Amino acid sequence: MVREDALNLTGESNMKHTTLHPLAAVAAMLAVAGCASTPPPNQELTLARAAIDEAAEADAQRYAARELTSARQNLSRAEAAVQRNDNLVAARLAEQARADAQLAAARARAVNAEQAADALQQGIETLRQEMLRSSEQY
Image (tube, rainbow, N blue to C red; front, side, top):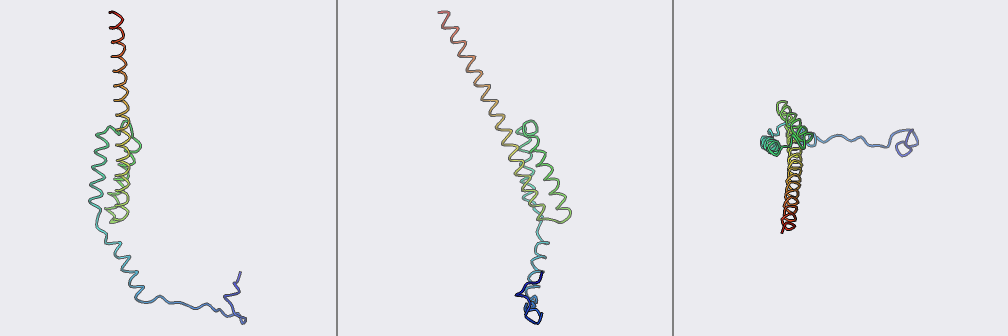
């Protein structure tokens, strides 16, 4: 379908042809080149590894295995991206790995805290019953 505003009565186009300004083309090429020269995300990788280690110490393999597995997979993907010199992707994956590991650690700590609270509650109940038996004897 032909737009009426694009054609004049003789059927010729009224649209103007635009050309890319040479400076804009240079700026675009520099922007692309700047992306390619992004340094490896060493700090992000280090933080992700540390978060995974912390999650493992919190027993995340037992209580948050899915999140810990995701963290490890994202870290592996990040390391592979660094090898391909795809450092922007590597940084994003390393940050995701860190977030997954932190979530795994938090979930594992929550389960551990809940279990400790349950054990404490059970101990309190046992003491209460012993006190009742002792008071009944006297």
